[in-house]
Length: 535
Image 1 (cartoon, rainbow, N blue to C red):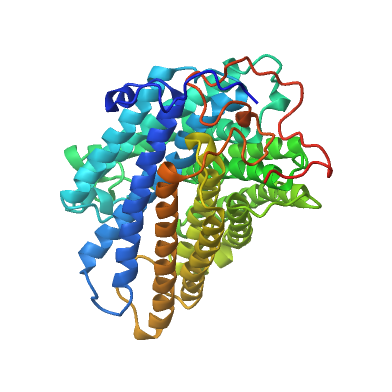
Image 2 (cartoon, one colour):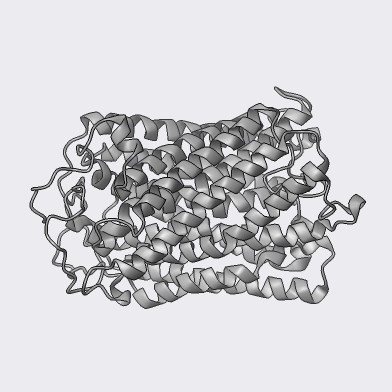
């Protein structure tokens, strides 16, 4: 346990200005956490509005154009303002230097700049929402996005700016992991969460410029009428799909890989066991990051691409499932015969594993061309995407929030209430999206504001599940806000974890460590069954 000699990062400057000008990676992580939680709330309100509209056939609370704008803004907010930055920018910023024994990230000023770029991009995109809002869907498919009269341009520019924040964050993590690891911390001692952030950073740096380029081309076409994607001007809309999905499918792993890193940490901590097959988890992380660049075409089976192309993209997509299966079996192997502690981070971890397995198996089916063509653009795709992306990512985000809440705040939260809320959230997700799988199998198209009356019962069930989910999030927000002020002092390591980040005080001092950390063993090195779990 580190001696409590240095001042906590929370009390080292208490003014708003000290936060807005900080170079401390921990404060920057906390600012990203607050921002992403705000946009999670905004995107969730958009989703509830959509579910209320779909309670009844015909118009319920909004017209068709308003509905199209609403699901576009829901997608833009949740994908680019919450799911992509939530774990890397918030928890990655806070924890990576702590886990590798560094005083800060490699480029502290660029780290602060990434916050302001994120805020600027989000502000521009939100301004576009209030100026009329795009109605293209979050994918901005051409030629509709180049011809619609809604405010597409500011939303495009906002996402373009956010991309620079993502690139700076990725570059910072790569440089930090390569150059600032403490003496003795070799590559095969690096914590699994750091490996996940490292693999994610590679995708961010390589793929995000492609998104920026394609969004800039769409904006150019809207402003000056360049015939790049619009077939009426000699352009090719399929080219847009190739460029967009070349980024957006690896972006799936920008969301999921950090989530997998969180799960690897939580599984070891709450089973009191070394990670089962540490090296295979590391290699599967890098394998997913690599193969993810070669699977974008499975989004385009209905676009008229060649039979060989569809088969090749389908096979590569199934290869990703092998790397994912390695992780799942490794987590199960870690849990097997472990000293299990049923805490809220572990409940969210089990929820993550269920959503990843269930959604991933359906993803293998979607990688089969004949099945994909049946489900393409139905509600089954919506359910699959939300199971594998939103469900899994949110489970890992909540696991991280509860696991590292004592580290970040120095406070404990009410554990029984947290456990009950975790169960409520998991069942809320299932109740929301299982009816949508059934709707898709019955042929209900996605993105439609209206539907035949025989679909209403399943839409009502989905909306009821979304209401349950919203209530669960309100409970979490309530007890975490209460705990920030009234929660009991957590102590340096309330979970009894052997993770490297717990070797400093909780909350950590400004420069992370009062004495230089040493790493004689690897991460997650637990003794055997004779070691009791911390109370």
